[in-house]
Amino acid sequence: MVDKITESMPSISNLGGAAQKVEKVGAGQDFSSFMKDATENSIETLKAGEAMGMKGITGNADLNDVVSAINSAESTLQLVTTIRDKMIQAYQEVMRMPI
Image (cartoon, rainbow, N blue to C red):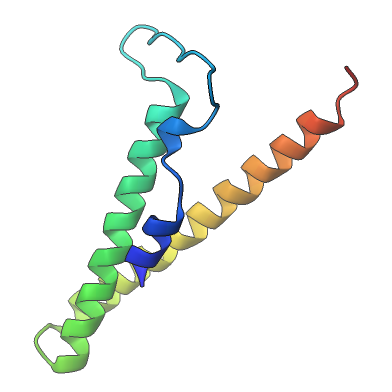
């Protein structure tokens, strides 16, 4: 299920077309790298939750581990959804700005 999401998402590093990448400032990283890393971590958390749920269904995992992994995956999904909504809201706000 999670694999279908990753296949349909474009590569975050390719967004922005011909725009040049922002140079790294100090020890930080640019926004696209940050978002790419966060997306990959979120996907791994969702996959781990899904796998632990399958182990729980088959009886190969402790109930506490299953509940913990599912809660972690649920929290991650809520965070990703909130970030997506905020990014769309920011994009719409920028599009409303007069030129």
